[in-house]
Image (cartoon, rainbow, N blue to C red; front, side):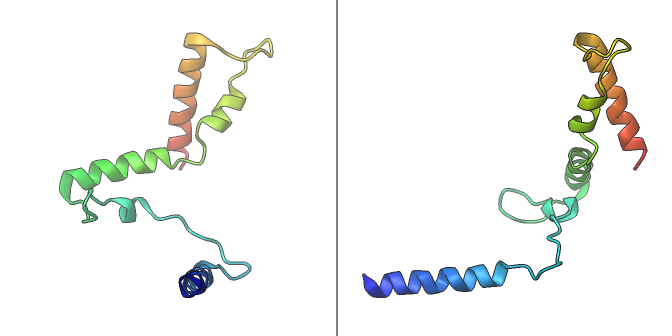
Length: 100
């Protein structure tokens, strides 16, 4: 039991050291191209890959619901609701995607 615990702690320390980032390093998230894998871990190809990358890029938009949500305010200062909010959010997202 003691040997098992020692081995586990040593493995945890090694794993933590291997994944630790140096000060000032930024961890880059995997790109959509790198994430395009099937359920078996093999890379996607053709139309499947193109569709996945397009969907992934759309979801990865930094100007997502948060910024648009804050801007969804009517002339009277109240938050938009219903169809007005839906239309505004759609236009805001389209504008954000076009600004890239």
